[in-house]
Length: 259
Image: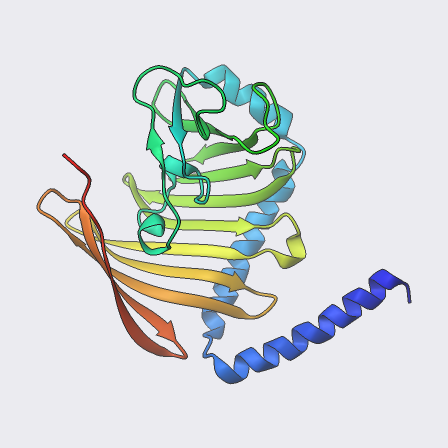
């Protein structure tokens, strides 16, 4: 047995022990876990399909992009200012969307993201600045693939490796589900999952699942009720977090945007 095989054997033993401890202390719904495994499998298959297609994606997007926008901040959240989730930055500390530059293009080094839109206003490409980025290369890149009411996001790192895949499902323009998997190492692919309910066209409830790990047979869950002001802005999220099978309530107060 070589060192790698020995390491993997030790890891598998640790994993089995961790699963036993988790099962003895946390209540997990096997049917939900099975559903998450299927979602991850689909996102991994999308990764495999586009793994070596970065050059083609770049060319296709470049031909259609007619407008660029830039933002500052938002590095800790998916897609920065244009993060699909309507609640992620509101309930997790340190996650901010950042702000858009309203006027002229900022100089390189003064922005965090560049967004490319087509003539219909659809976001096609997101270029993120990282410590290795130059004015012309080594950006993190995300390309969006539109298929009816489904939008896939393909996130490549600055070396051109596809490591994260997301999926947004819409119904008449309303976001119904948001799924995102870090699946660069397919065996250890995880999942973040949100599902939305609307009342009179306003977001009313969010089923929020995070730290979903099939390897550990584990996930965490929050059920969010959403309250709005008279202008439709989210002002409060009431969370029933499921801990050991029981709901514990937390309240997130949100400052409405300045008029």
